[in-house]
Length: 621
Image 1 (cartoon, rainbow, N blue to C red):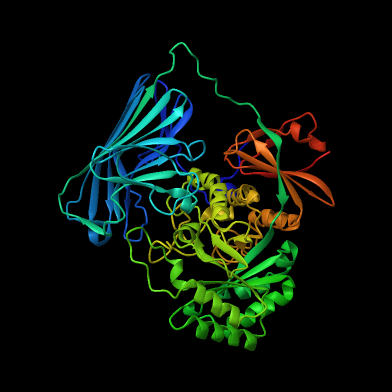
Image 2 (tube, rainbow, N blue to C red):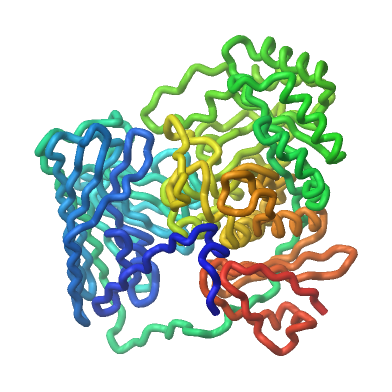
């Protein structure tokens, strides 16, 4: 089945397929000079080994790769190339890379040199361990001073680095198979990348306690090496279980149940007029919540609130005002001024989500926390300024910031945060894999805040703000770029599948509200002028948001997938009956066996064939 790339990805720029490297039971995919999905005997050992260069805003360079040479036979492979990064002011970084592998060892070596010096926030190896099957499991860490410590990978998400001053880390891949990852050339530490919804633990070079950006001196050689050593103590006569190939993905009803969350839509003053122009689409979607963004520091005032009133009147549903409080003067005076403006505009939302503007920026380990009033003072001021209105807190940015600065929730009616899947990587595989991290995020929030009402969003593929640098990255060519304020996949079926997968992954969190889009603009359901789809046209994501909004308040039952990285599903039950909702998270057709979920009437006795990134809603008998 051939599907136009634009329909799938919102762009005709297609990722180059990786080169599969094999040596005995060891396999790895070579993509853009780095290694992905490193497996031993069919089991993922490492998610990636990459040599990365970051700029002063933590943006990732896309180096030019030249002189690529690949040699491999049945028991060995070798790769070599040069990578060139072009920095500001005509600065250059040249990296000489050599990769070799045999049946039980993989070596990745790099030597970097900058002829005229080079500024960077990070230059070196990043090693990613997977989270599924690894979170909470034992590990052995060897430190740079030779000390060896028996520990565990974190289960709940830790806000700071779980392991520092690392030289090596070892974990069990499967019974009687151990994998040691050894790093040379600098001091490494690990952070829990689930904080950013990455589906990995990341071991990286140059501790965050050291200053950045830093300068690589002219002609100074920077040498590093990462090695993966697999120790297989199994009986050689024992056969590994055969991997499934080409069979249908099975869905089975699970035990967990709950209630579908309300669905929200984010609206900014900048997109208010476009939202009003598309009021018929807003009525068709019928979201339960409109989340109005209000930032006095960005010049938002009475006129913005009057626009919100016009939209809220059309919607006739609930509304929340999301306030980025400047905190340039006392919280009481600033909230009182916002309350005065709301009265002038005639705007009274059902809830206020308030957070200091400065807390949108991240404070990494080793950094000085910026000046900010105590959060209890902020919430007390909000209570006084907005009597009779529910008050929420948390972060206008991501779970990372909420985990590092845990808000006091005693005065709050709900807590909230967002996520973004392109903080560190923006390739198709990495973006979809972020869905694996969402249950860990929501479980960690519940561990902190118990049964406090909980909201997520707005969470979209494009990034609305960059807590880790001075700006989001412009993306006029529609490429796959980390931290970009526009992402082409938001226009395609990829974005539709991602949103439904997101909603399924957070069902167990018992969310009060989930916001996955705007109505218009780069995060919206309706295309605007200057975009690759027809202005006013509906993006595929429109269908998912409309479906989820219609299901708000219905009961759900989990449906366990035999391959959740490829297909996710759940059953919803309301007055109209029971419906099986299924989504294909891959760019290839997938065959699904849903017979044990009480076969869909139209598919009784037959497998369901799902097109790439397709969604399906099937009534059940």
